Length: 234
Image (cartoon, rainbow, N blue to C red; front, side, top):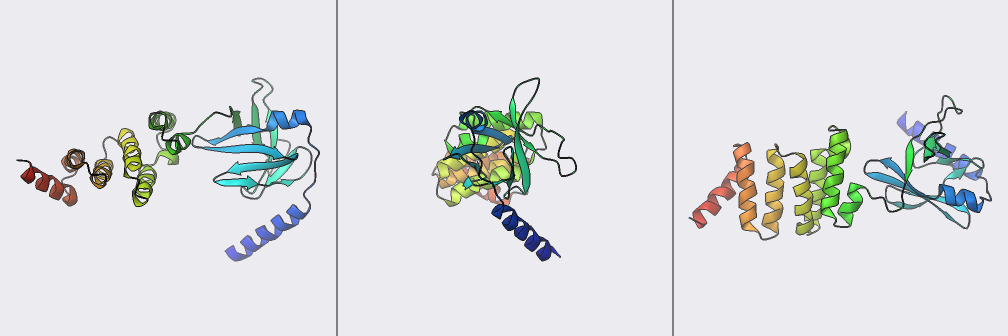
C-alpha cells in the first residue's frame, strides 16, 4: 500500500511539474518576496530568483525549483505543500503561507519573513559562534522545553558527528551547549568528558567524568577513568 502511495505521489509531482507556468515576475514582486523565512526556530527557507525564476533553499538543498501554479501560488515537491506569499494586514509583516487543502481561501501566517542576516542556532554553530548558538537554543527551551529541536539526544548526536570527523574542539562546544540545556543529565557530562579526552585535555575529562559519575554511580566508564586519573595524580 505504501509503495502505491509513493508511486502515485511521484506520478502526481511529475504531471504537476510538466504544467509549471512561466511567470514574468515584476521587480517589485521579486524585491518584496526574496529573502529568508523562518520555517521553525532552527531552520529557514531562503527564497531567491534567478533570471526571474523562483527558487528555494531548504534543509540543505541549494536549488529547489517549485512548480508554479499561477502568478501567486506554487507547489514545493520537497514539502508536498502549496505556498504563496502574504502580508499581514495589521502588522504588515510578510509570510510564506501554506494553502489549506480543505479551504484554499483560508489565509494562514506560517513562515515569517526575517532579515537576510537572521541566523538560527544551528547556523551560529556552523559559523563557530557558540555563545550566540547557546543563547538561541536556550531561547527555544524557554519558549518550548519539549521542542524536538533541542532534544538531548539530537544535540548529543551533533557532537558525536563532529567527534567522528576528528573535530574534537567543535564537539566540545556542542556538548557544552547540551550541558547548559540539561545540567541534571549524567549523560551530557559523560559526552563532554569523552570529547575533552579525545582532545587531549585529561583534567577536564576527569572533571566531567567525575560529575557524570556523581550523578550516575552506574556509569562504569566514568568510574574507571576517575579511579585511573586519581591514582596517577595522587
